[in-house]
Image 1 (cartoon, rainbow, N blue to C red):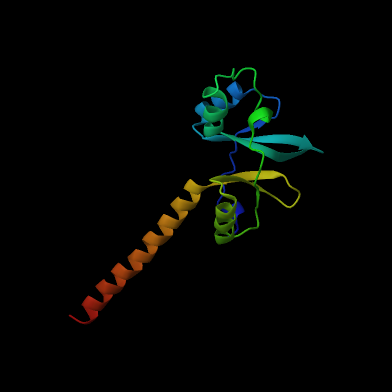
Image 2 (cartoon, one colour):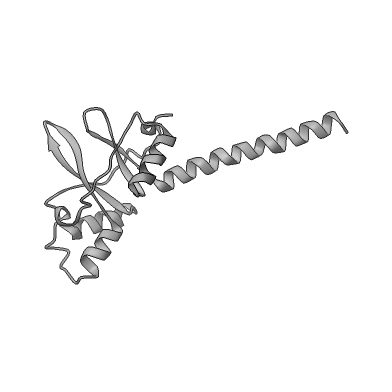
Length: 149
């Protein structure tokens, strides 16, 4: 299954000149832990960074900076990781592990933002898949006990 089928397509976005305070307000309003920073290029929304709730705490709150003055461009992650929508689930997990990220914007072949995938999304999918496997074991045991009383 390509990761584009699993990713969340309702991505909260900001632009580089938006304030950190606006990013925090959007995270609270939408109950998310990140915003994706985009730039529009030829009518295509391309992700250029990401700001997480942790970035806000470590970079702004802990240092006593004014979140209304600091822009998301000032604090967005410098090493930015995206995943192509055509990537498989296991490939995405390996890539996120290698890059040590918990979330990654998903892009199409032209680099346009199509969604975001998070570690939580992947854990939820994998736990559902493991649950289905345990059901096989349970059904197999039931089937055998009925066939061989």
